Length: 198
Length: 198
DNA sequence: TAACATACGTACATGCATGTACGTGAGCGA
DNA sequence: TCGCTCACGTACATGCATGTACGTATGTTA
Image (tube, rainbow over all chains, first blue to last red; front, side, top):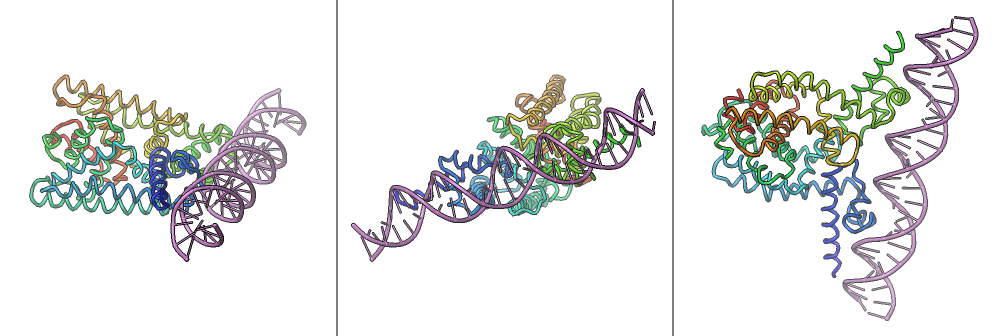
């Protein structure tokens, strides 16, 4: 096996183990020796691939973020209208979260709150852009009448994302009901008829 | 000041500081010296009032649980019908959560997941009874036709509580929109018309 | 008022996780 | 094939939070 191949393999193994560990225990309770052992290595390999614990966590966050946009964000925004985009986002997010990896974001957001920590700041940055895009979709839907009026779009977007995430985590991948229930949640927050949940 | 009075005062001060600390930093990241300082004491007082960190956390959980039932659970169950009870639960829970203290449950549930920790077990026990009571309400509402059919009542109850909690936390006490949005979420999960959200 | 109990502060010991320095063996170019 | 670099393991040092033992001062009871 060549060196670059070997290095990439161990790096991704460590990333996956770290993602699972972060979603289960959070950042503070995450023990790097456990992460390395889970991936089949020791802390030596981990500190060779990543500068420190924070660097590892940021790498995990970035990895989850990019795969999320690939599997959830982009397909949803390619929908023809705003309502379809928002419902698709809820459904795809649900499917995405069936892998426990997705709980990483939730766990870290809860853990760091509004603290001044690099990982927390990155999580906040990602969340803010997501909220902005959802708010834009909501405003578009309201302009063409497909979404009824209500609280400010930003507040609705916050509630939308929080509610979908909360429901998905509570259901913990209870397929196949999770997808329908997430759609119901999304429709409810937006003030749509229950028919949109089906 | 008499001794029992003095002791009760410091105990409640420590409990409140611990609740705030737990909701902000979680269990693992909670530093007992900070808790004591926030309450105006030192770790000596804390270890005199509570056996150890775990005992303190369990006391906080119990305190939050009883106040929750007093301010949210019981008033909601006194509603005449199942739908009113569930919507009232969502609204009252939102108001309850405007004090950041309520984030304690969410933070601890995320942190301990399904781990074998006394605090995690207690959180799970409380959550399970809540889910059961919600499921009972949903089944009652379906029997008399006020709630349309859908996924199993237990799954709906899980999604209901998770979505409301997620929305409330995301909104972070953005009164007054939070209450309306929580009601919308609740109605949506149950499959009701959007009119119930108003 | 004298003896005791209680509330709380202080100082020390322990464990544990992180980060770093160093050693080893396998690729890789000259 | 010789020397270098890279991937990884091992061993040590440091910091930090917990828990405990002990000291002190203020109520409390006889």
